Image (cartoon, one colour):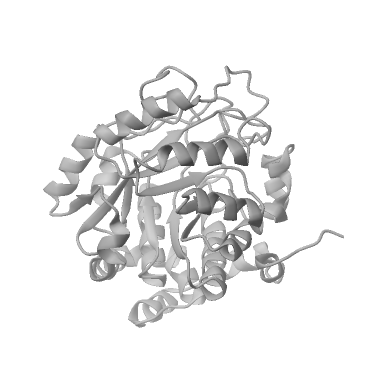
Amino acid sequence: MERKEGFSHLFDTFSWDEVQNTIYSKTARDVERALAKPKRTLEDFKALISPAAEPFLEQMAQLSHQLTLKRFGNTIQMYAPMYLSNECQNICTYCGFSFTNKIPRRTLTDEEILKEITFLKNKGYDHILLVTGEANKTVGVDYIENAVRLIRPYFSNIAIEVQPLLQHEYEQLIKAGVHTVLVYQETYHKEDYKKHHPKGKKSNFYYRLETHDRLGKAGIYKMGLGVLLGLENWRTDSFFTALHLKYLQKNYWQSKYSISFPRLRPHAGGLSPKVEISDKELVQLICAYRLLDEDVELSISTRESENFRNNIVKLGATTFSAESKTNPGGYVVEPQSLEQFEISDERTTEEVAHMIKAQGYEPVFKDWDKVFG
């Protein structure tokens, strides 16, 4: 019998099909009731992400704008991802780094890391997200810790998106200077999760599901959640993400939280989305999260188009990446190495910052937490 801890116990009390049915059975009256409340529950969230909420999108957007302005002001936090390695031992149906893809593998050396961060510092970034594939021997905890120690003098906020680790390993990295850890479940559909992750350590659904509990116990400052939109039904997956968020906030109230909205993008390996989520539906989802929780950070990456990102600034988003490269060494060292996925918004940092300013918002590059802590 598989040993389960933390969120797994709560998760196992829910049925995917039952949750999905309740979302699709929500009515316009349920949506109106949710919109009228000063504080909303997970049942209200179901109504706000349901098809019944689509005619209420304008009202949701206005409320989302007001709540975001109240909590975050007219600011957008800017960050840059930096890929350290594309080596990976997992087989994942949706990722260009998947072990089965016959691609040139690359892991940055100390010298190469310093070249990449020099480029990003010159762009003004103070928040950096370090990303690797999941290859414990090549890019294990020691490699990540070394990279964090190298980078720490240059950035006030270091986030990582790497393989799920043990509690003591997170404690080690927090001590080295890690501020935020992002771990996406990809999908909460337990059976189909196995189809998308047939081999490798990532195929262990519950080990990944319990990662945020290990992070909370390790005392991480901020952790991020999300699913890969397109793998499964986005409404149902998003309910489970919200359930996970509320569980974590209750149990690890000292930590801050962020939600990301990655949509399945073209990549080497080429899985097509099982369920498409339209731009309008993604706006609905972002607004629903804001209406559920006015404190959670909502992050929009360069996976999204220029037009979408221009229009989401005032609707609930708080964090933007710009000029992203999804390949190791992509900024300076080896711009032509294989990307994890294709980005959509290819504007420069300066162009994105100008767009944000043109809307009356301030792109924040310094340490945001010192402004809003």
